[in-house]
Image (cartoon, rainbow, N blue to C red; front, side, top):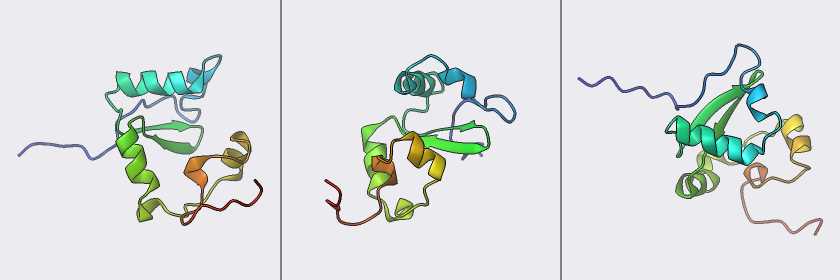
Length: 103
């Protein structure tokens, strides 16, 4: 029988601080793309920064599946992430029809 891990691949980082230093002085999207290629984790990659666990998709089909899945609908948003992304982020949009409020 083949031993297959169900864990999402990705860098392990340092205890407690995770990969916080990997992003210093670099463009975040390029760091994430390079990590995904390095760990052969383009469809899905997992890593931690501090005590927060992130799951990243670098493949358009996987991202589309995630964003259109009811399993990920209306997931809670941490206030820190909301502030960090300037109150805008497709991944944090509530499930359902697009609202045009505030535009």
